[in-house]
Length: 407
Length: 143
Image 1: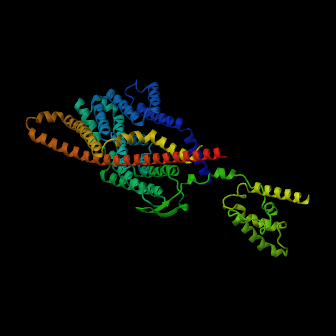
Image 2: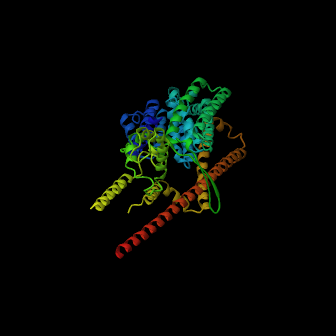
Image 3: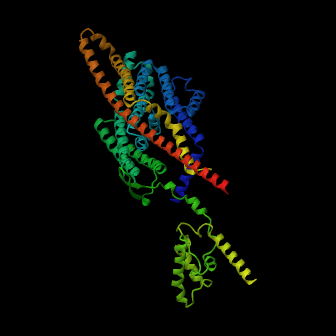
């Protein structure tokens, strides 16, 4: 567990340090992936599908906002469609325009859902997206995930039936082509099943993860996966959409694993160290429950490297002046009291008097085992900071005074 | 002298100014009713465009049938039906936009209020530091 925590902290530190480079690289990779998939599946416009253009668009995507990249990708898709057929291009353009005009105008920050959902279908992991967006997004993410589903199924249909559409669809006329595309779009039952179940899942995950319960994100993931499976399976059975239930189940397991990893990086709380406080001001009484994040606890890597005690407990005891003679500072008191109690407890069994210079090895070992060895605050080894030097100075001053007295 | 609390506050504020402040300031410089009304007007335009796209696609879908029956159908009734659907669609979209932008406005206001409170706190820290500096210089001169 500690090694996992170290890895997580190392990754977070690395990403935090190099965010300036990592964000453009990630955006470049995302755009490159989307462009290469578009070019390979819908490469009807050979110039746009060429590698230099793909690279240029990906490079532009690395520094442009994701919303603008989404618009550029949509325009490239429409251009490919135009090369295939004007009617198909009109249908796809109309779809994108409705999406942009109605939805992305006021929820533009969710455009990542619109890009990633079709890609998740391409990589056969569509179930990951609704749960992830429910965890990291807002209820409006259900529309962006739904839009992604619609975009993927539309483009998938065109890619699958490109030859048929090129030859002219029903009756070979332009109107026939248009009709074929719209019919295929409206009657795509798999698309309806996925869109509905994903939207419901996003909403459920969002509602559950905001509950003030322990392990809210993990509970949300589990609930979301179950809801996704049940709604998709039920809708599939009702509409006869032809979705493989076994495949769906496997997808949900993969989704659960990926989302647990996401949860580990984004919402890793330590529920064993919950703090509850109550306080009031003029207007309210506050009941506060604070759950610490694991990342803010001690770094295990640092903990291992922490310097060891340089002074042994025996040496500490031997140089200590008699307790009756010295002024005891408040911070030192618990340690010294514990040591004295330990001396009293152990020494009589050996039948020897307790003195400041003759503490047995057993007693010293026993003291090392006790909490006294952890320091006055019970945190880490050693005396309070600066105490060693202070003692040395005291001893030196006493020696000087003794020498002066002798003279 | 460096003050850790002040540096933390300033870092947080700089980050806020770089990311959300511009958006929130443009939202909060309007009165709530003005801002939401403007967005609703934009929403009406967008809903009209979207409806026209869908309506055009609907006509084009069965264009031959439509042209054949154009003299048989009651055009007033057809237009009334189209208008009814347009109103229903636009009103429901505008209600959604109204809710979304009201929430966004109140969030922006709240966020800016928090920012200005932090600004005040920063001012107080500066004032305290100046006082301490003055006291320090006075004691130095006395010595």
